[in-house]
Length: 239
Image 1 (cartoon, rainbow, N blue to C red):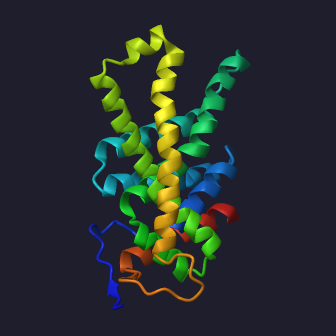
Image 2: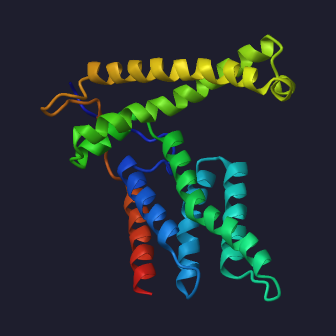
């Protein structure tokens, strides 16, 4: 099978290998970062990277919202204190800490799902010599979550057609839970099995090297981005 270079639909749609590297670095610094010293400003820059990527692919409302929430939580965690009330300080510090440690990773995951095709992800993982025991579950999960989201929306629309709304949920919560969750669980099991079978059918469980119509190639924007991120990371841990 002939290979071809995968053309990115957007200049800021980074190589999947770069995206995975950014995910690891952003998650590591967000989770383990301190709240004192000069490193808090470098930590803020790293935490804002996923939101900036969301902006660059055209998701302006979501991008700006994530930027505002991240900066607000960072400021609340690092600088807001009430000398006369420790309880008030904790009520700001704890939620802010949760947001700064998990929101950047969630936003980066959203960017990864929105801008990466399954074939690109598989090719990127294989080029990094990742074992098939990791590649296959990731490929299945990558298709699984968007499919479940679509299935959940279809179930919700079907419930609306039958007059089952949130008002019904307040009146009969257990029955609403049954109507909403039981069909979704059945779909989850069925779709998971189908995606696993489809992955095996495509030859993901083969031991020899697979051919692919996609050949990933690092562009200048990928090298520039990963270089800047590595400089930030090294500077952060040195400072």
